[in-house]
Length: 422
Image 1 (cartoon, rainbow, N blue to C red):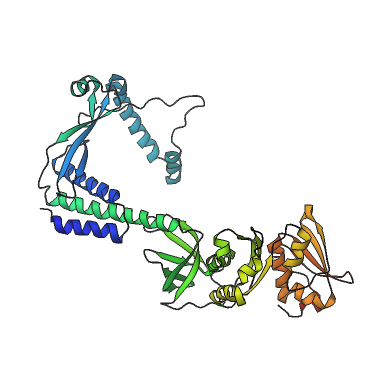
Image 2 (image 1 turned 90 degrees about the vertical axis):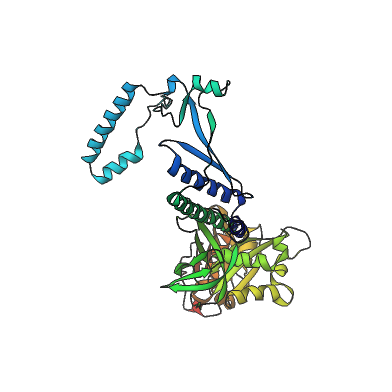
């Protein structure tokens, strides 16, 4: 007998704690009950459906039959030819290599161009089919292809084996439903910052407990120099959510440029409400980022919005990034102005732009060379990524001191240009 009180308690727990929709749980139980009924009392080929009443614990059962006419039934000759073709096919496949067999099975038989696929005929099975004439006795307006429902006798006891079968199906279906629920939950968070606790570290990969699932922070998505401790709570950017057989694949990043942008979105209300927009971002994870922001509303300073009063907003983001330096500039539609600002904190004398080639020659004073180029060419490299322009840095005398493209090519430098101001 079904322990209705405990069952209803478990049902409520599934709804509240696992987040599985009520309809999905009922569908799972009904599929399991139908499978159990068919195992003990059904016949081969029979289609059984069940309806479960959670209030009473009772169930009703129906048999489903599809209405067919003579044109939908395979003739004895067609069945005989089909069997002969099947045997021949098995013999042919047995004589071929595994890869060749798999390729043919995947490809199937092509339909000739302009040729419509013929209506599929069935082998008549009285347990799942009913002839049109007979169907009219039950339902006068029945048509071919329609499904008719016939009540089955309800059984109070499905037997020990059938009950185990129902239990196994319920567990399997609920796991599938929970996986689907978890996938849907995190899919909606893709491209957002989420928080998790370091659960374990395997090799160079860090696994975070995200509540209902575990996310992976691969080595290539970690910030150089960061160390992660078991039990530590950290934030990360959810890059992609994949649907896998056992559990959703949740791939995280702390080095992604969008991670910085999303941290600012959390801290800056003007970004969240659309008054300020981050137009571009370039990042050397763990060292320095450059951000270009623009105001969508008159009277709002985009740089001031990101910096915050006394620098509180930008400092909060810097603290989350472990001290990574952040340059914030105002985005400009004019490429000369934009490129000049992108090389901040260096002061630029002149910018010559070739828009069709996405190239720019920037002239700076001798005392600004180190700032414009940056330590190891970092400043000009990030400026190139931020603006999308190949940037050549020249001194006032006309000598080219460094060059960088948005692809992050290593700049050419003179000895003088390698001085550190980064």
